[in-house]
Image (cartoon, rainbow, N blue to C red; front, side, top):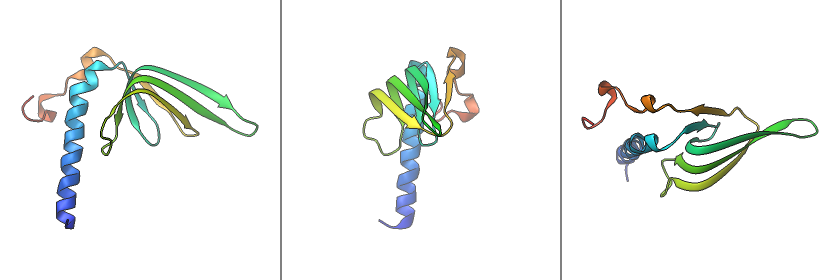
Length: 108
């Protein structure tokens, strides 16, 4: 596979992932961002864990969709993340789910 073919393949995977996100986002209540991943989830629990010299966050999520271009199945029953980095949790509102027409793909 030459470099151009690989780039085209990668772009197609990214576009397919975006389309899947667009199709499933209405099924979820929360968006969770960590330094490594982006998640959609219906239940989220973030707990700060203190150690002797530092602290970290333990994030537990259930009914989850994972933004990962290389996963065969992005729907996961439960996810647990441990991180020393920032965590962003946002509760979605139903009105946020529609893309403006100018951002819509395939006229949807």
